[in-house]
Amino acid sequence: MNLHKLILTNNACYKAGRTIAPKGIMVHSTGANNPNLRRYVGPDDGLLGKNLNNNHWNQDRPDGRDVCVHAFIGRLADGSIATYQTLPWNYRGWHCGGSGNDTHIGFEICEDGLTDAAYFNAIYKEAAELCTYLCKQYGLTEKNLICHSEGYKLGIASNHGDVMHWFPRFGKSMDTFRAEVGRLLAASVSVTEPAPTTQKTLYRVQIGAYSVKANADAMLAKVKAAGFTDAFVKYSE
Image (cartoon, rainbow, N blue to C red; front, side):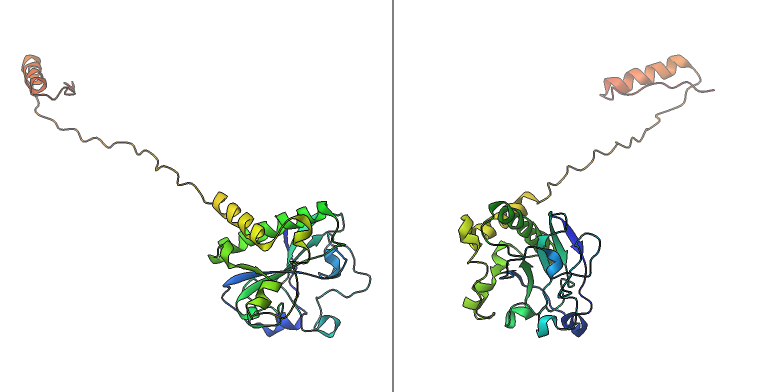
C-alpha cells in the first residue's frame, strides 16, 4: 500500500468534528472518468500535481455539496497508484447519504473509463491492502466490508450502484474482494516466536574445608559414590 495523508481541513465535514467508533468499511467509486487523485485531493503536495480547475474537495462544500470521505485511491502525477487519507479514520464522514456515515469508514476509488485492466488490477490491490490495514486498526474482519450498492440494500446508504458496475467487468465482485482481504489478514497474523532460552543459574554447595588433601579426596569420593558426579575439590590459599 502506498499511503499518504492530506486531511481536508477546509471541508465542512472535517470542521464539524464528529467522531464514530468504526464498525465497518464502505467501498465507493467516483462515477467519473478521472483517475487522478488531484481531482479530489488538494492542494498539490508535490506528488499530486496541480488541479487547474481548483475543484478538489479541500473546501467547505465541494461543488456545493456536503461530501467528504476518509480516503481516495487513484493516480499520482507520475501515474503511480496511491492512497490518500483525507479524514481522520474515526471522523464521521459524509460518504453514503445514510446511517452508514455513523458506523462506516468510507473511501472512494477514482474511476477511469472502466476498460483498463492494468489500472483496475492496481487499484483493486491497493483497496484490498487499505481495507486490511483498517481492519487491523479497528479489530474488523472481511465480513465488515461492503460497497455503496450493498449499503443501499441494507438500508444504510443512498441508491448508488458502485462498485458493482465496475468490478464484474474484470471478473471481480465484493465477495472476491472480501475473500482477498481475508487472505491478506490471515497472511499478516504474526507467528509467535519461541521464548529465548534463559541461562541456567547454578547454586554451589560447599560440603567442607580440609587442611589435609587426603581428607578432602576421601570426602569427594564419598560424595561421588552418593551420585553427585559433578562434585569437585577446589584449592584455595
